[in-house]
Length: 165
Image 1: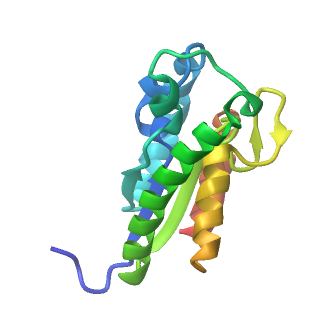
Image 2 (image 1 turned 60 degrees about the horizontal axis):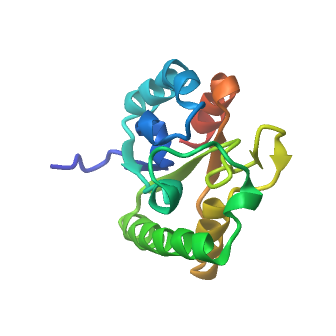
C-alpha cells in the first residue's frame, strides 16, 4: 500500500551496482566495499531500486575480460543494447506517468553504462547502452537525469544524487 502524500522515487541502476559478479574479470574486487554507502543512501532516501539488465553479460557471458568501448561498438552489440533500452524505456514511462521522480544510475568507466566517461583512461563520453537509452528517451520526449557512479569518488555521486532527490 502506498502512502498518499509520500514522494515516490525510483532509481534505475546499472546491473553491476547490485550484482558485482556481472562485472568483467579484474574489476569485481574493488567494487563491493566502495558501493555500499551509495546503496545505503538510496535506501535511506526511500528509493525503489530497479536493476537494468546487463548487455555485456548477454553479449559475452559472465566470464569476460574487461574491454573498451571500441570492442563493443558493433551493430550486433548495439542491437542488444537497443532492445534492452527499449524495455527499460517502456518501464520508465510507466513510472513517469505515475508521477514518480526517476533517476538513472550508470557506472562511469564502463564501455556500456558510463555516463560521463568510459574506459580506464577516462575517455570522455557515454557508454553504448547509455547512448541507446538516452536516444530512446529523447525520441519519446522523456527527460530523466542520468548520474554516473564514479566508484573512486562515491561521496561526490551521493552528493549529486541528494541534489536530485
